[in-house]
Image (cartoon, rainbow, N blue to C red):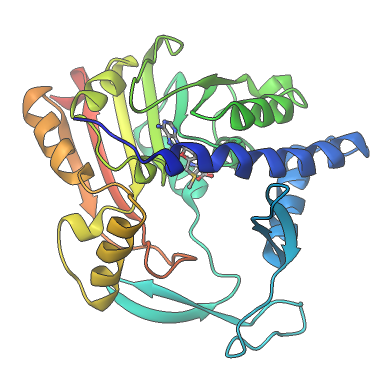
Length: 293
Ligand SMILES: C[S@@+](CC[C@H](N)C(=O)[O-])C[C@H]1O[C@@H](n2cnc3c(N)ncnc32)[C@H](O)[C@@H]1O
């Protein structure tokens, strides 16, 4: 049965709210360019992090641990990460690029008439896809649990109506995707199923119902559920249990494959350079509808 820890349900309401305030200030100061807006928020967050306080969360200048020597750009030159189960020290500015992956995937497997992210926060991945060369002639949808995420995404999207982006309330515990009436839909998730400790296999059937043909790409930290690649995988498992993060994505997808006739075309574990060394991203892609045959 599906289930989620109360803290995981509550955490992002405030986390997106404080970022929404920051975005709102930049928009009020005259910023109208969405990529600039998002890159400025990212630049700010490279040096400031959200800290809890009695009056709610607030941004504070990051205090780097002693061993992370700060370089000329005001951030460390290197940061700890992990790759394929082992710890790795990588350039501070090295990062995964989900949006480029999706843009390249669309060029191979598209066209799609709807691109949908579930658990999208304020929609940064959707905006990065569109401004990173994603299709112009399709609709973009962001489904998100928190009201603050939906509101922030909608405020950003209003700056460029040409993108045709829409944000809506979505809950993995009671998933409904009626808002996405598509012929061919590309649905993706990025570390959002992570937040739900147990999902139902039925979730995949609901996603498959988003269109006559659906391709679904998951960038989720499920590697430890399938194979232990090294010490970082073991740490990942412990951290997932401790934080009440997802423990059954792989099993639920396998169950759905049989029950709902999905075709799984790709599963690769721990191929990211995560910011949190003990929460590496893995990749799974599946298909439903005629294209699955
Ligand atoms: C780590 S953040 C990732 C956000 C976004 N995918 C990204 O990459 O920027 C996790 C997201 O999952 C959302 N989330 C948590 N529980 C959820 C649920 N039950 N249904 C839908 N989204 C949920 C959170 O509100 C948050 O936006």
